[in-house]
Amino acid sequence: MRYSTGAMQILFLHPNFPAQFRHLAVALAKDKRHRVVFGTTRREGQLPKVDKAIYQPSRQARPQTHPYIRNLENAVLQAQAVYRLAEQLKFRGFIPDVVYGHSGWGPTLLIKDIFSQAKLLCYFEWFYHARGSDADFDPNEPLTADDQARIRLKNTPILIDLYSCDCGLSPTYWQRQQFPPEYHGKITVRHDGIDTAFFRPKPGAKLVLPSLNLDLSQAEEIVTYVARGMEPYRGFPQFMEAAVLIQQRHPNCHIVVVGEDRVAYGRAAPEGKTYKQLMLEKLPLDLSRLHFTGSLPYPQYLQVLQASSVHVYLTRPFVLSWSMLEAMATGCLVVASDTPPVTEVIQDGINGLLVNFFSPTEIAERVDEVLDHPQRLDAVRAKARKTIRAHYDLTKLLPQHLQWLNKPMNAIRLAG
Image (cartoon, rainbow, N blue to C red; front, side, top):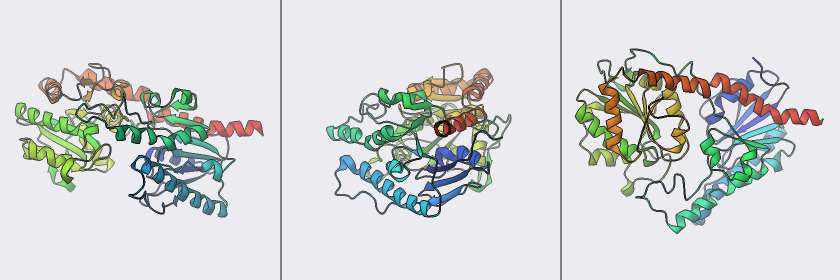
């Protein structure tokens, strides 16, 4: 099906590939009238009929750069690299009608100077605040004056994009709420979309991952946790403390943690250790029933979700993870933190269970509630999937994304 109304040359920009633009880029590239180019620093991976264009910043921010503006220097270096890439694209005859890039990293900063006639669309994922969201959420991590100044200035490249772009998009209302109110009129709220045909329940599913030598086919109780990194931003320490209680109360329960032993968001662990190392050293966990898989390919990740008895998702007031929505689409019983990004989607006792982010005891008790009465909450599982299909389904959102992207092009055609 073709959703757009005319031929288009479009340039996607994101340091990672394909990131939030996977489905949109593939859908556009299926239409032979369009030419789709994706500018990125990531050499790995390909998308069908999408031309990949690699750019590389000449260096990283120097150590002697003032710490408040190292993020800005890296953004400028990204923008400079994209400018050089744009000159090459022009030489090869590619001049985009639309440029769609992720704001904050920097690649979109100079687009209006490079391609002055192009419409600039920005994906606005997060606007930083020292107070009232993620940064001051944990009372055990008080902010210094330097922290507050650094956080304020971290918004500099985002503010330039807000000024320069023709329109923008945020995936949730909570995330748009973080941006200055005077720019809300420029920002449409629309989630990237969840593939509910892929992420779907499989009654009786067993978890067997031969590549990891992991066979939990005999396990009747599996608690799952998924995050890009094992970090306080996603409640990893609290989950590990809850895992101790869960293992004590459920001697046959296995716990599966999917994600890398790193920090994707927030501060690194002290003394050069990882949070995983700290938790394993600190807590009396039964390692024979605790399984760390690392990052998984999507088919194996799906197996984890389909076999899950309870899925735990914890987050500070920050960007909402795709994984929570994917778990809901798969029919998981999600025990999630009672924080604003979560409560935009989950109602306690309706399509999931909410807990105090900081309370391992409460997390464990709500997991107990599910494991002790596995059939009683089937309606909650069903409602979780129904929520995703109603509001976050890729098949509904992708056409809307394409219409939104084509809107500035229609404006050009009407003006012409």
